[in-house]
Image (tube, rainbow, N blue to C red; front, top):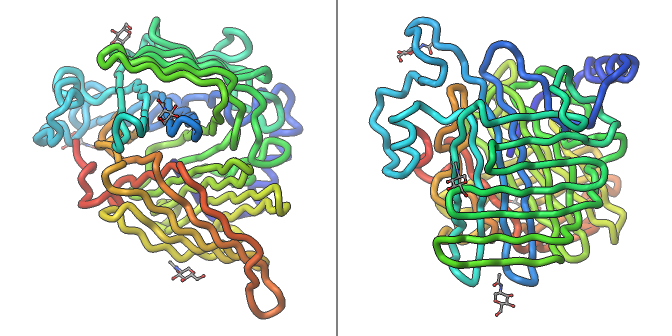
Amino acid sequence: MMVLGQGTPAATCLLILCLLATGCHGNQFDPHLYPSNGPFFEGWYVRLMDPAQQFSLGFLHGRVLPAKNSSAGTSASQSPAESQKCKFSSQHCAMHKQQGLPLVYASVLVQDNNVSQKLQSYNGAFPARDYSVTVQGGKPVVQNPDDESPPDFSVKLGNNGSFVVTADGTLVNVAIGNVRLYIKASNPVPWGPHGEGPESWLDHLPLPLHWFVYSLRSTVTQYKFTDAASGRIVSGGNARLHMEKNWGETFPTAWVWSQGVTKSNVNLALSGGIVHFIRDVTAFLVGYRNPGKNIVWNFTPANSRVSFVHDGCNGAFNLNLTSVDHKLALKVSSPMSSFSDCLLGPEKYGFRPACVESYNAVASVRAYKRNYFHFEEVDRAEIPQAALEFGGTYVCKQKCSGI
Ligand SMILES: *[C@@H]1O[C@H](CO)[C@@H](O)[C@H](O)[C@H]1NC(C)=O
Ligand SMILES: *[C@@H]1O[C@H](CO)[C@@H](O)[C@H](O)[C@H]1NC(C)=O
Ligand SMILES: *[C@@H]1O[C@H](CO)[C@@H](O)[C@H](O)[C@H]1NC(C)=O
Ligand SMILES: *[C@@H]1O[C@H](CO)[C@@H](O)[C@H](O)[C@H]1NC(C)=O
């Protein structure tokens, strides 16, 4: 998913302040403090990859604290767009007509290639009173996390599920509609040392949206997916888990997100698009890893130039990043038949249709190092079973914009 801004030394100052202050807890994967006024949201996303079974799934959940609409004096969950015709004939519209945009939302995404090319989503809205986020074995969240401490928190969706993350591992146990999901994972592989994430230390700036990757590929020791409606059961014990979160005001106007890892641990994770920070900019956060070649490259707006061409109607984008020493040329694409219907994303007044996603993408990577006046290719890779998301106005025909 997404974020960004421009680099500044203020980030360093804030970091030092946090390190000096006593009692900072948990790394950035831990819950953040909700402000007293919205818009604000926080959401977690994990993605499981089991290439041997041609199977992949995701689990995401989060809560929006909506912006207040002062002039109308309406209930907080009602949006200005509420009077518009609901374009989506689904479950979502019915739910929306009844109670406004959902504020607490969870989704299981499934790419089960033996059953269907298309990524399926199973969605549930929950009342805010059923959503509880606690740290350190049940304590309320009273401050923002620091960077260094291991995570220690738990999210509960009423009686329907929990997401528990500690230094010892991660446990997902959730029932949404007819589906159930269980995941047990451990041994996270962090983005960087000392709790560094994709934003590097830009995450201490008041950006409109933040993106943190807690683990590039945790080891899944056991998982089970059950769909009572179809009778389908998929289980395994040899898969990997990407783990990340977003927090901030709302999702941006337009974005792409991609993530993938090969058998030999070549790893790509990126997020970017049109971000409003002082003005609209096209900004990307990108991490590329190839342990076999000692490559650990991070690109942020503070260290690189971006060249980006996207085509949501062909399920593809092309992104080049150039820093002083390195260049990364990426092509990510997935068959249109593999993309989901519109998925919901957090916006100012609640969750609403925002993006489409596929887990059948291929990311091809060319990596170059500067050698005096030109770039020399040092690595190339193809990452199969990658995730690819188009959001906001980057979605083909903007079909997910609206309610
Ligand atoms: C899909 O089919 C392949 C080949 O028959 C099999 O090895 C794999 O386990 C199947 N995956 C699932 C999730 O059923
Ligand atoms: C408040 O809601 C009304 C209608 O629901 C809308 O016309 C107006 O623009 C909204 N105000 C703000 C500040 O969003
Ligand atoms: C909660 O779980 C029950 C039982 O499994 C299920 O019927 C219900 O649809 C779930 N709620 C949501 C919002 O998915
Ligand atoms: C990225 O660079 C490659 C060559 O390395 C070039 O073929 C491609 O057109 C570039 N794409 C963009 C979007 O700049």
